Length: 375
Image 1 (cartoon, rainbow, N blue to C red):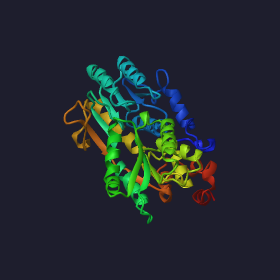
Image 2 (image 1 turned 180 degrees about the vertical axis):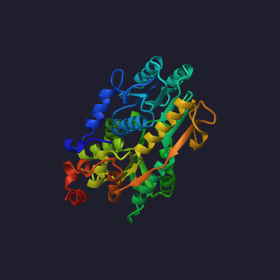
Image 3 (image 1 turned 45 degrees about the horizontal axis):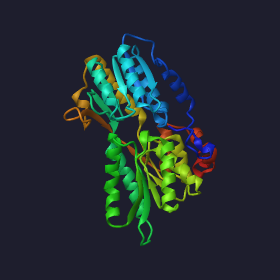
Image 4 (image 1 turned 90 degrees about the vertical axis):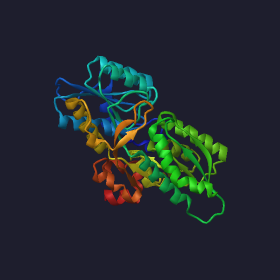
């Protein structure tokens, strides 16, 4: 779910979207685009940004397709807040006043979204949270990948790389977190810490820089990394991140200093196209793959339950996400994840996320994997 800024000197400040994403963005502007012929009910899917490219290139289209299959007479409207939480609140208000039957919300900001939840609740429009949490209001349920497992996979990879070698000096790392306050960010950190804290406590790893990245913006992650490189004099043994977008920002900063491929970037997630190419090139160590079709399908299944019955079946709830409002929390369906490395990238092709033709472009085309797969 990323384009290929590799072809733009590895810069991530301007991320190009694939044709499918551009089409979706066009459909999501203004009043939004519909995925089916009409019917008496309308579902709004509200996306947070285009910087986390998976939402426009994968989740949106996948949810549309799943809803069309499950309830073809339901109109699906997709809109994007373009990194503006207040704009998303307005989109919720517009959806409610426009007669939305349900809202699938990928919150742009977990706290600002609370007001939107309350407006929807007052209007008796059920909200299904998708991936991101939203605090301070009622939600019918949340569909999210197991965030703790994501962090654990990232931490395990980092510990394996940082424990290698025989040097007596501690490995010096930077930690670039996601958006502060997000449920996911906190859970990813907890999972990472299970593996990193013992190494830090033992003096084997030293954290030179750590910072949060507002709205998961790759450009901001790049700036954070540039500041860290200045602080450390370019002396780092690794960078631990939380998603592929921020990994891309970090790699852009490392590239400018001639360090891409020399300083491992560990801890991506989402299996963005750019990230997959970076993994083959040796710039990024891994990504946590979250099967988006599975998430979109589950979201569609729960949305259908809300439209037909006004509630979610208890059998679909695996636990709860604390949103500071509901007790014991938002009922949640937790989905499994898979850690991918250079030798398992083929999983994405098998699952139909990317094709080898898409992956093997630009510098990635010269990698041994692409030479083998493209003949």
